[in-house]
Length: 343
Image (cartoon, rainbow, N blue to C red; front, side):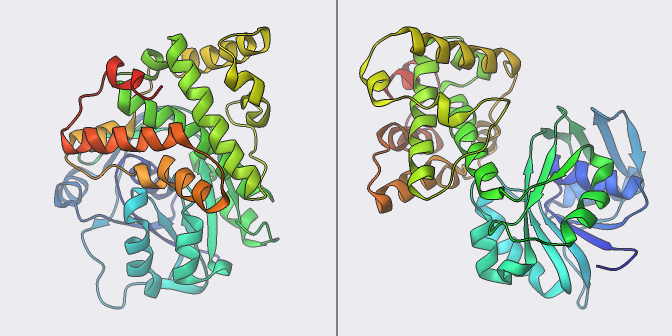
């Protein structure tokens, strides 16, 4: 990686816009790529407007709808698209990636494997993002919460670029490196399968789900099935939101019981998570409302598919996938009744 790295951010929505804006503000040569011409025009007109956590700033920025022939090389290509667009984004950006450059995968799910198949394992770095962002209007990028970013390789091999990348991304807050990225990914997948999917099915905010006993139980069952599949894959999920997910997963006895003291403790943990993130609204529900394809196959669908291959039952995740597709088709309406139907 060069002393003055060039960065391409593919996907300039909430997350990508916050990243591109923060890097541009710190003096990095960064180009944003978005097919949304309203974003391109807004940034050209008034720059990148950053708001929320980190303060309010207007930064001169560069966002284009398509790359000019011969664009690049870029030392760092940040993939900030929805999961269901990551492979196309990786293929399109691959010719612009410098020979010793890195393609950074931000998406929820297990997308590193998909990108590795396109550009090679040695050129892929995973990044687990634990903060939120939104784009209230084109060219306005809001950091909605604080949190860390964690960099690593899916094969957990040492990579001297990680510290360099962490320093480059430092304007965005605390950036860590890990030699257990797979565990981090599976941990966040378990959390997303519960938070994003149940939030979509219930509608409203996360508090609407986890402030009810039925919602907490469904969340525990989704996490438990995801942990089961991870362990069968040879991966131990890392702690997420301060919670040991392998402990939180229900034991066979707890799955068969309606209530027990230990179950009560786990419900208490879920209630604490719901309280902390009570205002969080599912980005997948927002995608459906905008007429977009929900990335459910990269979350609970990934758990179901891998569970089938490994012989691990995932019935609640499977019903959750069906419910999200029903909402997307217009065959079902988010709400408490639909959530109850997962039981």
